[in-house]
Image (cartoon, rainbow, N blue to C red; front, top):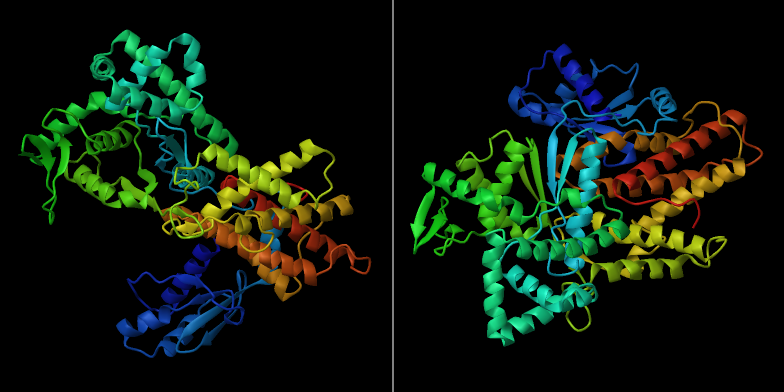
Length: 568
C-alpha cells in the first residue's frame, strides 16, 4: 500500500483547487510524534517564499480543499504552517481486511520494472571465504531479493579473480601433488596457497615452471586449463558451502570471473583510444581524469591489464549484453574512489549509456570490541564458515533452556535459524556505510533491534494461534489508538521497501521491522486477545491484526534472507 503517493495526490489536487501553482517537489513526510498526526505536510513553508504569503494563510487555503471523506479523517494546522494529517480508521480497517490472506502483505509490483545487475560477494579463489566477504555477501543478496520482490528482473553476478600470475604457481603445485594427494591438500585452501608460495620462493625450477604455466593458461593449453578449472571448482565448492549455510542465493551460474572478460580487454583499450581518452606514460596506457594528476592505468608497459580494464569490460558487458538499467556494485567503501573513476571513464567513453544507473553500494568494516578490524587472536583472518558454525553453537546455548524442544535435532534446527539470522540481521540493521562492532551478546539478545527479538515476536504470535486453534473469519475493526498505529504501520510496508530499494539501504527495512514489533508488543500487552471477557468481534479483529503483523514480520525477514521459527 503506497499511502504516501495517495496522500501526495490528494495534496496536489488540493493545491490545484486552491489555485496554488508550484514547480517545487512538495511531498508528505511521516509525523515525528504521535500528537502531530500520522503524516505531516510542510509545503506551505516552502511555498511562502515563492508566493510571498504567510505560510499559515497558505496552509489554511490548502486544508479547505483537502478531501477528508476517505483516506484522511482530519487535518490540522500547527506551528508556523505545518499541516498534520490523520488517517481514517474505517479506511485502515477496509484496506487491512483486503490483505489478510495476501502473501505479499499488500505490497504491489512496481510499474517501471528494471533489469538490475547486482555484483556481490567476490571471494578470492586462492583462499577460503573470510569475514571480509561477509558484508558484501549479506547486503548484496538482500538487495537482490528486495529488487526481485518488487518486480524487477535481477541478474546476480559474483566477480571472482581467477586470472593472473598466482594461478600459474597454484596449478603447478597442484600438478606436483599428484592425484592421490590433491583432494586432501585442497581441503584447506589457505594452507595450500602457503605451501605453494614456499615452494615458489625456495625452488627456482618451480618458479620458472609456474611462470611458464601462466603463459600456457593464457594460450589455452589443454592440460593447464584442466588443472586450472579443477582448482577453481574446488575453490567455488568452498564458497558454495558458505552460501548454503548463510542461505544466500548465489550459485555457480552467477559466477562471472576475470577470465571471462579477458578476451574483451583489447577492445576496451581501442574504445578508449578512439574516444581520445588514452595517454601513454612511461610505456603504460593511461586515462587522466579532470582535476587529477594521477593516471588510471589500463594497460602496463609489458602489455598486461589491470583491474580497471576488467571492470570497464564488465560494465560494457552488463550494460550492452545483459541490457541492465541499473548496475549495483556491493563493495567495500575503501574502493569508492576506484568506482568513481571507472564510472566516469565508462560515461566519457560511452561504454555505458547515460540512462543506465551506476552505483557503488559501499559498506564499512566489521570491527571487534576494541574498534579494530575483526581478526583472530593471532591477527589472522577468521574463516567465514567457522564464524557461522560458532553462531549456531552460541544460539543453541542461548535458547536451549527456553523452548520445548522434542530432541537435539529439533534444538539444532531452531539454533541454526537463530544463529545465522543473528549474524545477518546484525549486519543489515546498521547503515551499510558505517563500520560496526561485532558483538555476540548484542546480536543474540532478546531485547533491542535484533533478529532474535523479531523471531521471538513471530513465535509469540504463532503461540496465540496454537491456543486459539479455530477458524478465523471476520474483519478488522480499529477501535483504539494502539490499533490505529499498528494498522498504519503494517500498511507502511510497501513505502518502506520502495525507500530501501531506491539507493540500496537494507537498514530502512530493519528499522521499520523494529518499530512494527515494538508496537505489536505494546498492543499485545494492552489489548487482550484470548481472554473470556472479550466480545467475539473484537477478538477476531485483534487476531487478524496479529496475523497480519506476523505475515509482515515473516515477509520482512524473508527479504532480509532470515527464517522464522514458531517457537523459541
